[in-house]
Length: 164
Image (cartoon, rainbow, N blue to C red; front, side):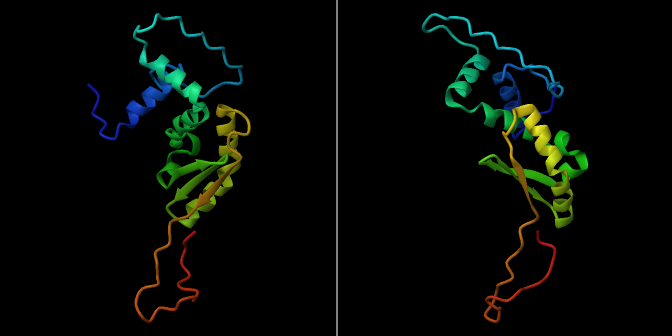
């Protein structure tokens, strides 16, 4: 029996895969073959129960969430996209206006991911469709506030440390 996942991440991934009409197990990366057309949902009488996967699929399609759901599914496999070492030191933070925002542990890891950004964008667009992600903005760690106390300099340059 598998361990209980208190965060529910695995359940969310399973629901996303089922909603996309995919298998319940992780699928390999897509090949260059064109996608197959989905079978239309079979007609049901009013009040008949509907499988959860079909209901979610219809809701996602009607609401226009397919790109977001597919993107979140791929970002759930961040380590597969950037490699396990890079994934340990970075995490996707948000996606808006076709721009993916990524936060890293240090400026060194931010520089490394900035070099990988074009290939990550290409992989994401290969699986999501062209121009879904236009660019990646990589940020280093948040800098702490150094403006404490009555003797702090208001517009001074502050410490020159590695805050990205």
